[in-house]
Length: 135
Image (tube, rainbow, N blue to C red; front, side, top):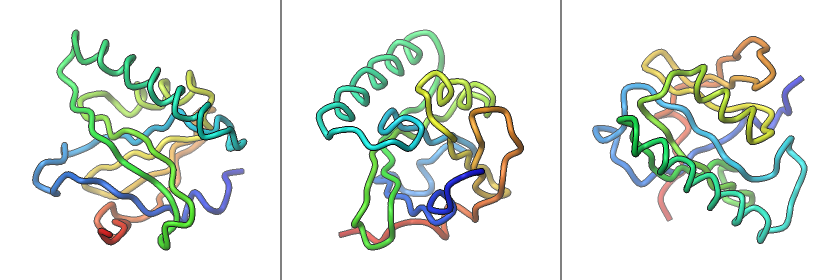
């Protein structure tokens, strides 16, 4: 069963809606399996993940951009990456390899919470309804 807070996530993204891919995934390397790790550990994991995405981008046409997920009030924020140009299955596999419980998949029909264990995806809401206000 997915953690209830996953259904309450708000996203921060510096790209304008017109700059976003039509569909994309959001993945983090932080806090595998939802277990808290130190800021240093998470930062190193994100850097390794960023380097991996650069290698993928060298052989495939993908778009990678920073996305932060967290609470509306900003009391909890977790950095991640938006990734366009890969399929939902490829994004889910990346999440699985990073030992994540789930990824987010954004498409015109809505935003989905996709468990990395192959369980059924669950609707969250529309991406544009889950944007954190800019600071």
